[in-house]
Structure formats: C-alpha cells, structure tokens
Length: 169
Length: 273
Image 1: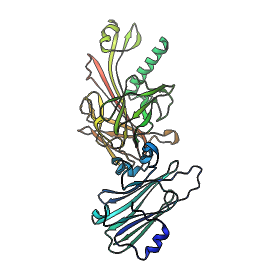
Image 2: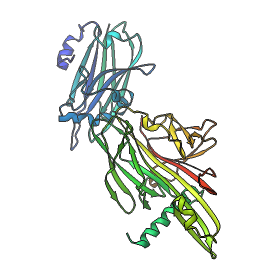
Image 3: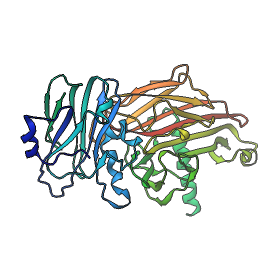
C-alpha cells in the first residue's frame, strides 16, 4: 500500500516533492449526525473513451464473511462502471474505511497503474457513500503525463471535503 | 376458502384479466415489485410484492395471485420463492439471490375464458381448453372464447449482469432486452424488443408509467411503438421504478374459434447516474 502517513509530512516535502508521482489528498468531513459510519470511497481514473483504471477502494473490509461487500453497490457509478466486475477484497486496491480527517494516497509513476497509463486527458473520479447518509461524486480533470508540476483541487459539498491532486513529472 | 369466495375471486380474476387487456379507463395494472434490482455481496435476498392496482406502485386493490410464479437463476435453475405471505392488497415472497448474475422473477398466467348467453342471461366461464365442449352448454349463444396469455416479470442482478434469463421462450408476448434491464440509468436511452410467439411484434404499442403518482399531478406516462424489427427505445426522465406494459389481441390461438389476448408487463428500476 502506497500510503503516506500524515499531512504534516506531506507539507514538509512539498517543496521537494518526489519526482514522478501522483498524490491524491482527500478530506473526509467530520459530520454531526446521530449515527455516524465511515464512508465507502472509490477512486478511479477515466479516459475520454470511458475506460477505467481503478486506484483504490475503501470499504468495511474487516467485517466477517466479507459482509462489507453488501454495500459496495451504493457507490453506484463505480459499481456499474467497474466495481461489479471485481472481487473484493482486491490485493493492492481495497482497504478499510477511513475516519474523518485528511488522507493521502500516493502513486509512483514508475509503478502500475501509472506506469502503463497512456498519455491523454483523464478524470480522477472519487465516489463516496455513507451508511444511513448520502452519496457524492467528484471529478478532477487532468492531462497525463504532466510536463510541469500540477496542483488541482475540488471541493465536495456533503460527503467529501477538499480533494487535491498533485502531479509531479 | 368457501365456495362463494372462490367464485368471487375467480370473477375478480376474470374481470381483472379482461379489463386489463381492453382499452377501458378502468383497467387495473398488475405488477411485481422487487425490494432491489442491483445487489452486491454474497448471498443476498430480495423481497417481492405482487399486486393488482390502479396507481403505481401502491397497494390499494388486490393481491396478484402467485400460483404461476417462477424464478430462474443465472445458471437456468429454478429457485423456490420463500416466506410467501398473502395479504389483502398484496402477496409477498422472498427470493434468495445466491449466484452472481441476473435472475428473472415471473408470473405466467395462461387461461381460457368464455362469455356466452344462456336463456337470455349473460354467463362467464373459465377453465381448461378441453373443458370448453363439456362446460359450455350446446344451446349457448354469442359464445366468445378468449385464450389469455399474460406475462408479468421483473429482473434482479447480483454482481455482474448475465443474459441467460433474457432469452425468449417463443410463446406469447415477450420482451427481449437489448439494454440489460438492470443497467438502466436516468437520462440514458434504453432499447428493448418485443416478440410475439417468437417473431418481432411490429407496430406494437407500449405504455411506460413511472411510479409515484400520489405525490404529483401528472401521470408522466410515455408511449412507444415498435419498428419492423419489434424494437423500441425509451429515454428515462428520472430515476425510480417504472411499469411497462403492452398487449395484443388476435386470433392466433391454438384453441378452435378462440381469440387470443397476449400481454406483457414488467417493472424496471432506473437508477440515478
């Protein structure tokens, strides 16, 4: 799992970012609700032809008998486009849900999947669904490979907070 | 159930079947309504309501009889409905979705109905084809025999959709999906084909009604007509459950001197993008 430990560490190395990587930052909002469940989140890349590259899936992988797979379909666009063809848990792809706060996923461009990513226009798509809560989908368009460092951000309204995409050539 | 109730129910069934197939403003709608059509995870369940009603998808009239219910799994095997419950306005049952792929849940009603006059009195009859000659008196007049083929179905998919259950049987009015029935998205166009006795049903009219009329003014029903290949399309205006129905009357019954009325009804779930 290519997971960077904390936001502080990321800030420290921001000026001297590692060459050849894509870093996705996501803020899981802290919500004041009676019954809170950590959201299921799927991250994937889409090209202009609609082809999909899965990046990460956060779901309740710790439930016994893999019961957490029951709610994968609530990430409805991910489920329909790619999720229903996969078997969860998927090595290197799936991991447990995250608590409210900022999280980072970093991808080395010399390693799959970025290693085989053809040049072109893409969208980073993030879909989050929360038990007894709502669902939100965000898209971040970008060009690959980056010719210069790129910092992109979008902000969700309900289930997803700030999302950042940092690309370094 | 006593004899009087039995006869009453039979008449209600006849009335429902006949009125359903006419252009009458009082026609009732029959439907199966699954609790979900898209599932993930192993060994899921769906619960299905079966009802006859005016408004969709509300229980306000009669349950749909489940004597002719069958469930087919993705691998073609038969699945037994469980926990069947009979109520005033709906019948309900559970289906274990144990395999990945697409299940078809259906009620196939076949029957022969007749109306005739005996001594100036209007009579109705329902039974098996071989009983016509024995049950209907020789001095009956205005004998009208109808063979009714009614197919009511719905589809549920766990995991990746499959198409084994989508193959037609070649009997009556059937829908063969071109767009998989569990791949329906609001704003997108879906395409289906209607077959009559295995052949394209050309120029056939289809009615599509979204559920939820209780909370709005307009029915928002849509109409489509099949082309020479029996194909029609619909673009879903929004997510939700939709009722889709088509019926035809001709004389292609295998029963002597009988008209044939064939109908097809399905409940489709359209999801949000």
